[in-house]
Amino acid sequence: PRRLPITTLEDFPGYRIDPPTSLGHSSQPPSTKVIYYTERSVTPFLSAIPKRLSDIRLRDFKVVFDRPGQYRYHFKTLDPEFGMVKEEVLHDDDPVPGWDGKIVAWIEEDI
Image (cartoon, rainbow, N blue to C red; front, side, top):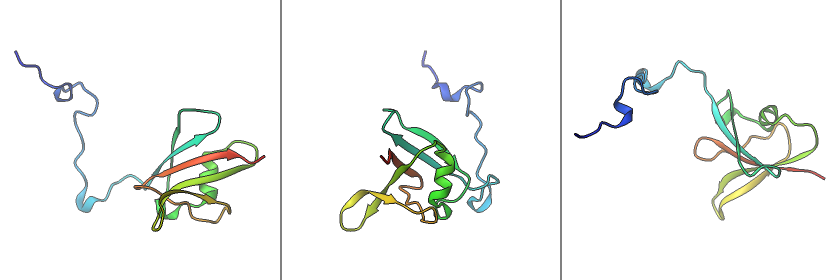
């Protein structure tokens, strides 16, 4: 007998997916996924900022990365001349660049 994929089982998480609301608007507030790497861990960290990507500033990112000390923040972005690069963001009011709708960051201790 042929087996059904596990995703067709009613008890499988995610079996029932709510249809999108009209015009693609969600009842959820806007949120942006954040993936960041540190020198002390091989595995990246995943978090979210409850704002649209275009509204996120470095100070918002620092709330997610709330460790004591001085750090340098680099973000994955697309440069028209060089392609994918890591852009350093220095000031709390500076916008954080995104990549494919999310933020990808590398954080280094500033010695």
